[in-house]
Amino acid sequence: MIDMTLCDTVLLDMDGTLLDLNFDNHFWLEFVPQKYAQKHHISVEQAKQQLIPQFKAMEGKLEWYCLDYWSEVLQLDIAGLKAEIAQLISVLPHVMDFLQALALSNRRVILVTNAHRHSLSLKMEKTCLQPFFNEIVCAHDFGLAKEQQGFWKILQQRYPFDKQRTLLIDDSLTVLNSAREFGIAHLLTITKPDSKKPVREVMDYPAIEDFRELIAQL
Ligand SMILES: [Mg+2]
Image (cartoon, rainbow, N blue to C red):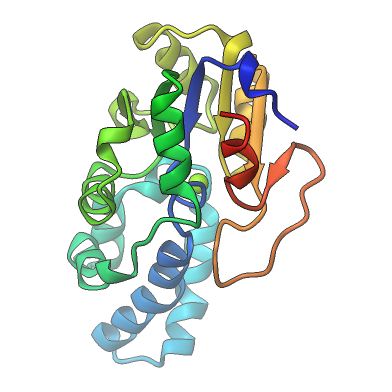
């Protein structure tokens, strides 16, 4: 497990770490195919067959997170559609307690997300998490996704942190691999990023199902 006494900077991912990934999974895998099917007069099944391979092909690339990119490619108002189902945006269990305890512990807390600024502001508006972060870093501002080494280099230049005393919590193993390659010493993942899906088994990194384990250490 992670020893929080060794960490004075905490980097937190947003979707699937603090926020329920169910929103994003539902949005991309159900809601967008429905709207795409309506627009093109095809069945939802046909829409899924066309769209899901396109989504897969862009995974891990910055465009995958770019609402403008998908609005252009799919000819749908992606930001508008997100707002339509914004009531599904929710924080994962015990996140609020964790962020409150973290704030009281005087650690530096930085949100690091690949999400587009539009998604980010919609999610901050719905969840009111913004005050808990010393900085909010959006990968689009650097033009590089967290999967890329360049992201971490720019992050460290702009917001200097000691790699040996920094913890990153992220549900994406690809992102954790990238952070490990950069040299961030403490890495932790989430086994239940989507509340509607079963717990996943993770072998490569220490993992928590929810934040209670970490709160106990603060
Ligand atoms: Mg994530």
